[in-house]
Each structure stands twice: as C-alpha cells, then as structure tokens.
Image (cartoon, rainbow, N blue to C red; front, top):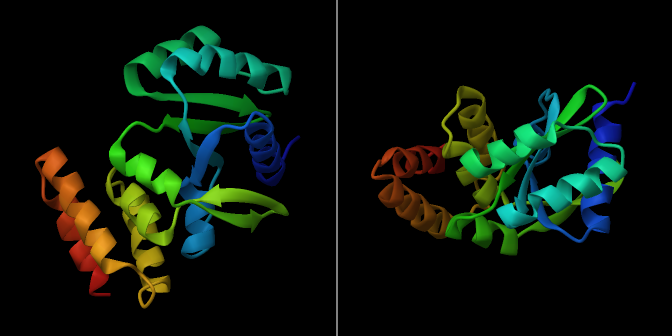
Length: 184
C-alpha cells in the first residue's frame, strides 16, 4: 500500500521528468504555506493543452498511474479537470487557462516537501486559488496562509488580482474576502 508521501513524490518526479509546467496546490501546499492539516490527495494545476491530455494519460499509465481514460477525456473536455490514481490515492489536475493562473505559474517557488523540490504558488497566489472556489476548507486555508504571512504579503498584488477576478466573475466576493484577510 502506498502512502500519500510516496504518491506525492512519484507524481512530482513524473511531472518533472516529463517537463510539464505545474503548481502544487490544495492541502499539501496549504500545509506548507499555512498551517499543517490532513489531506487525502494531491492537487496540481498544470499547463497543458486539452488536446494533449490523452498523451499525458498514456505517459502516466507507463509510470504506474491508473485511470478510466474515456471518463477522464470526457471530464477534461467538460470541466478542464482530470484525475489519475496511484494505489488508493488520487491526483487531481486542474488545467491552467486563466491569466491569473498563468501569472501564478510564472511566480512559482520551489519548496522541498517530503525530500523532493516541488513548485508551489506564492502565498498571495495560493490565497487567491483558495478563495475562488469558496469551500469552507479552502477559506480556512486562505485565512491560515494570510495569518502566517501577514507582514510579508504583497497587498497591492492581492487586491489587484482580487478585483480583476471579482470583475470577471461579476461578484465582489473574492475582493471582499481578500480585504477581510488583509485585516487579520
């Protein structure tokens, strides 16, 4: 049986070997940039064309990952996401497509996690990644990251992107949440 640590290391090694541009997000990134918490999967933002996902999946299969190819190709087309498995753990992928996601990728930082260097977003970018979906756990992660990095956060960058994302969504929730976090 594989551990989450083993799945993480194998995933990062695979992505680096294949020379994909990506960011580790989700619970693992939140535990590094915020405060440690439990997570049961690996979450990755990846820069890949949807038309190349079939090739990606075939390469992943050769490395020992499993998945339902037909289902993942359909999911990629419909949602811009897909998933691969290693043992009982899954690795969730979000295909990078927005200007914000591309900017976050260009600002990535390499951090040693479980003995392997992995690309993480900056604290500011992870806060935004966490606020966008607005799930309870994501908002708690964003708050923890904001608290831990409060003195060092680039407030102008955060407010600029929060306003842009709120304008795109035609909903001020993202901007208002960033403003709240900056007061912590």
